Length: 138
Image 1: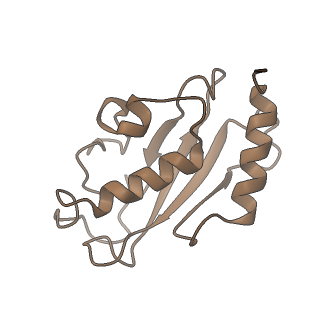
Image 2 (image 1 turned 120 degrees about the vertical axis):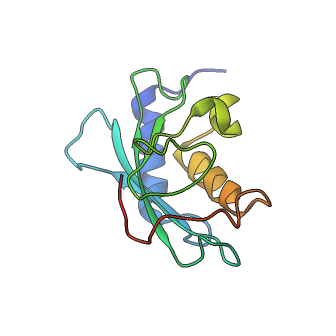
Image 3 (image 1 turned 45 degrees about the vertical axis):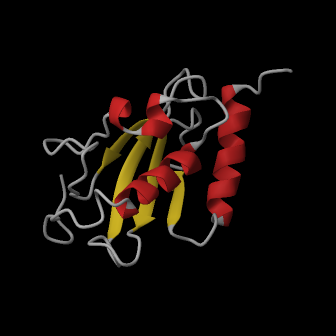
């Protein structure tokens, strides 16, 4: 089967992101519409209900390197959050601690990453973790 080139793949993701996905709890788009390499993205996650994250809006920066989608994107929280896979120094997501990044496949996408992070927020171990004040940034 032919491999879809990086630019085609990212255009597909951009189109999907602009239309909105699922229930609207995660969204993403290009940081700069003029970024012809489509490397720098913004992501938003609305915290899952019945958790300490409920009604919180988390902003993330996603960077798709030259080897994307063969290599996972770099993901960094701009909003402060206390999760085991997020550095408390700079908000970077440790790819080895988040299954979707650790077991990356080119079939995954920016959407897959955001949805997985939101699922982790709702997991038994993370749903009640004490969180920094709402609105604080890294």
